[in-house]
Structure formats: C-alpha cells, structure tokens
Length: 293
Ligand SMILES: C[S@@+](CC[C@H](N)C(=O)[O-])C[C@H]1O[C@@H](n2cnc3c(N)ncnc32)[C@H](O)[C@@H]1O
Image (cartoon, rainbow, N blue to C red; front, side, top):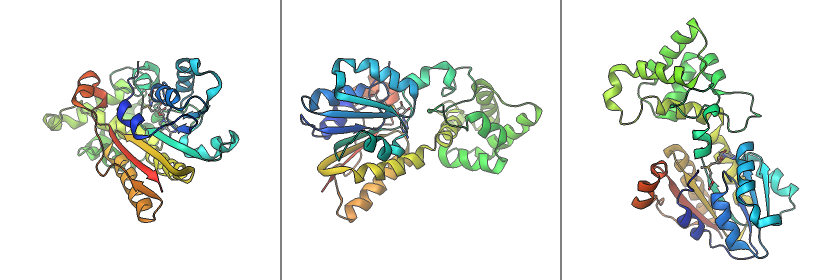
C-alpha cells in the first residue's frame, strides 16, 4: 500500500475544475491521480507517466473506474514532450510531480531499493535503463563513489565508505543490498553514534539518485512541464530530499523573475503531524506550488 503524501494539500493547491487536462508525471499507484480525476470529470483528461512499468500496471488497476478518461504511459517525465504530443495535448491546466520512490518500490524485495531486504543491487525505477546500482558499486572509481555518496547522500563518512567498497569488491563483486549495507555500516564504524538512522541509508539514497539520474530528470522535466502550462495553470511538486527541493525552489524563482510563474508557496509546505504519525515515510515531504501568469 502506498499512502499518497500530502494528498489534500497537493490536490487543493492545483485548483482543479471539470474539463481540465492534467499531467501527473509520477503516477505511482495512482493515489493522487484518483483524486485529480474525481475533480476534473466530466470533460477532463489525465495523462499519467511513470518510469516504472509496475507502477503503470498498479495505477491502471486503481483507476479503472474512470474508464477512458485517463492515459497511462511508461515514460520518464523528462520526456513529457514526447508523451503529450503523442496524446495530442495542446496545453495543460495543472501538473503534479511527486518525486522519489513509492512504497511499492521500497517494499518490493526484488528491486533493491531497501537496505532492509536481501536483494540484487538494482535500484532502477525503469528497468530499461542499462546501468544499475551493481554497475556503479562495482565499477566506478573510488573518487567518483566518494563524491556521489558525499554529494547526493550528504554523508560525512563518504571517503571511508568508498574506500571500503573498493577494498571489498577487489575480493569479490558486491552483489546484494545486504552485502552493501553491511560494508557501509562497518565503514561508518566509530562514526555510528552520529547516526539517528541506519548508517547505510544515505549511501543507498545517493546510489539510487545516480542510477535514475533523479536530479537531472527533475530539472529537465520541470522546465518542460512549465512550457506546457496554460495561463492560470498550476504546477505542484512534492520532493523528499533537500537537493530536489532546492532545484524546484530555484527554478520557480528563476521563472518568477522572468514573469512566467507566480510563486504560491513562499515557503515549502510539509505534512501535518497527523500525517507523519500515520505515515512516517511522509516526514521529509516538501510541497511547492507555482502558477503560470
Ligand atoms: C512517490 S511515488 C508517486 C506516488 C503517487 N503520487 C501515488 O499517489 O501513488 C513516485 C513515483 O514516481 C516515479 N518516478 C520517479 N522519478 C520519475 C521520473 N523522472 N519520471 C517518471 N516517473 C518517475 C517512481 O517510479 C514512482 O512510482
């Protein structure tokens, strides 16, 4: 089960009306899309994208009551131009991006997203990608690994961790999430008391961001999305990582300076205490909203 994060806040921020054409760039299990469809029918249409084939399947099931009013496409949202043109969309009345991994992906043991499961080192959202976590962990230079873990994991022990990975893989390839997690935990060693979370969490997050080029996709996809907005149309973005939130903040600011967007959320909104209590995975969610002017 995936609990859609900041559902009410995100949906109400989009000012949806019947007849709207809406893009959900990260359809996942279809939780947000379902609420969008309820508000844009009759007459509206939803295009849902997801890089993950399994998400498209799950969302299709979840949304089937809405019949022919939506189209789901297995596509990275950085390629939304292609998807929207193919669907003969002329412009959009609202866009939602709910970035990151879903609970389906985290809980699917075979995908390698979770450090709590023994799984092959994969972490690809889109299984058509050629490079998996295995390739990065076993082939990247030590200095590149260290940089990645530092930059995308904001991990202070990145050098130690990268060194240990390289030592271990010279004995035998590192094949599973459990092996990687154990190596990282050992490398963090005496630093462990600094962690409130599992010491492997940040390294896993860093590798996942690189496997899926998550920051590059967000920057490119959000720029493309803005170019499709009708005057008055809103774009809402939920992120789970400070680097992602910074990208959204800076892009919105840049467009506001150009007179293209008006920023609706001066500060990002977070989930309520109730939501965090019911779904701890929501705790780092940040919502930013802007309107095409
Ligand atoms: C947090 S979940 C979305 C959950 C969804 N809003 C719901 O209510 O069920 C994020 C989803 O976005 C997808 N995703 C992440 N980055 C993507 C990208 N660049 N292009 C397309 N899908 C992406 C993931 O595969 C995942 O299914």
